[in-house]
Length: 175
Image (cartoon, rainbow, N blue to C red):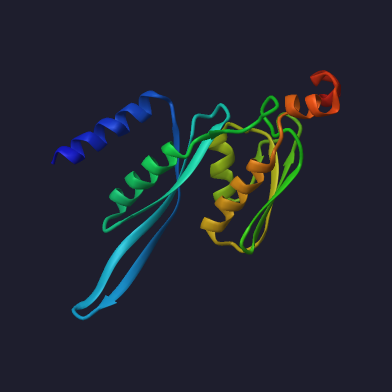
């Protein structure tokens, strides 16, 4: 009983911190045993602060609510900062994971998030409001989320690029 109370306290504190939580996909899994089938659930959850930090987690449990709670906790632990320029990404990038490929392109202010379900959840939790994306290959939600994160990992901040080129950040951004 205490564990449930602790989890509820953690959930309340997440809401206080202003974290955005998105359940991307819930999958029912059956294991066949001597007495019949044992059902369990997988939930992939994306959590972000809407200001450049995002993470994902895969929770597994016998009940949907527990799987989502576990996924949320794992996602919070895996949150990392990613570079942003105003409300978009700094440059075009391609993320790959397995057979899934996600193309991420920056766009002009006012475009909105043009993305499918799993990638949209990642972009909205990250706080990106203007981006064009295209998922190619696998439509598996798990692989699409991982491909989106693989692309985000490869992104470089304008400051890092300016340092490498020996230029000013304004010159790199074309301002």
